Image 1: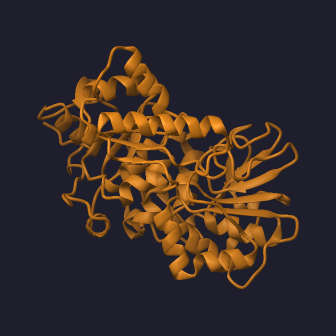
Image 2: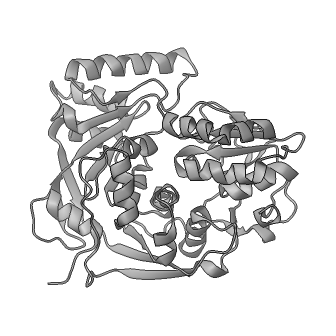
Length: 420
């Protein structure tokens, strides 16, 4: 019998099986069911409409309903108020409504996510937790209503694609550039229905903060999920954040992969995704002269401590170019507080940045920096679809925090190596 990949191990354990193979359909119990202020209300209402009375296990449910706080309108406030009452009635104690931040960042740093967990989440970027060796899979609200009721659902065991990042990255090249390079190579449908397993010496050298970016964007490549095996850095992160288990999970040495992709980071310069798709990627040196009106640093992709530090490394002691709005959104309150203590927020503020409350920020176009028709925005987000962040005529480019910070100084897309 061949060895198992990480996702195969997780689905086998959750299905009470010794082994599973790609293509098999299994019924698996989830270790955690999560949703947010957008996806939880319709899921819970469907649960009630279908005759549900009590959720399967309130201790295995988490609702992050403050990712867009402070709320933009009365409707949002009312929705979150209803969620708070529902969770109170159901005994769901893991509900966050006071601007604690993004669920994909908040849950891991709260010690809730452990290696080997199977997590169903009513949000497309559920795979972010794969940086800790957990499997996060996104579901729509209808499917989540079933999970909230029964604590299980069916899965088709996916193929696994191994992505190896080798070499020592050149100065200014970080995990965001690496995943954009993958997007350029395989496209937004290149991993349809598969799991992406990220490995290689360049991944091993990253901090956990940087690793989260890789599985976060797995969904942009059509993948079901993304994951990274656990090591000493993972265990250290888990211990610091009070996780109850620091047991690791890795693929077997003889695991079978549907495909292997190898990317040499030593030859990879900073990357840019041009409008209007995450796979329309070119090297920063090939973008030409692109004038910018707004730059966003943040979101669940690049709103962590490492990202804010990278931005401050370039912006400290300098000023944002006239006519450019620079929005910085820490992903969680914990990250915001740490950045305050380190002086990172002060450096960014003095450079001319607008510091938003923790959460999603402008990424989904809800609030905190929506774009107008004439805006040209450079963002560290995960998507640049037309209309994603406001007006359909706005142009959105994607990049790393280094590129965003350097470009904020010049008002044009700029190679960060000029300032490093």
